[in-house]
Length: 81
Image (tube, rainbow, N blue to C red; front, side):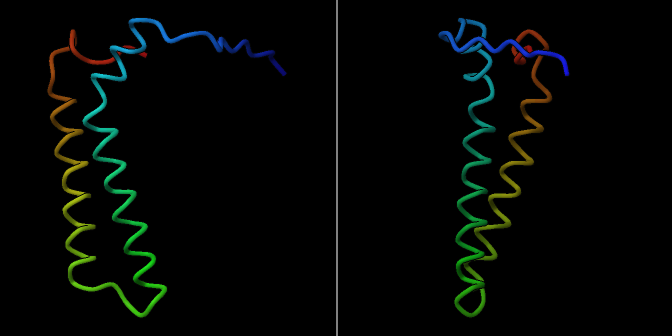
């Protein structure tokens, strides 16, 4: 097994910039997670309503839209891993 070195220091400016650039997608994915949780809770208590389904579909569409927008940005604005 190869030893892995993990730096638990403060994030660099590049790290923070990468997070900021991806924040719209992170936010959209968190909204999707919230919608999925609400849908599952509704399913456990009978069945999801049409509003639960709509919320889930809209959250999925938002993730897709934001991911496409980020993918379409010029390379200089994309986060570097």
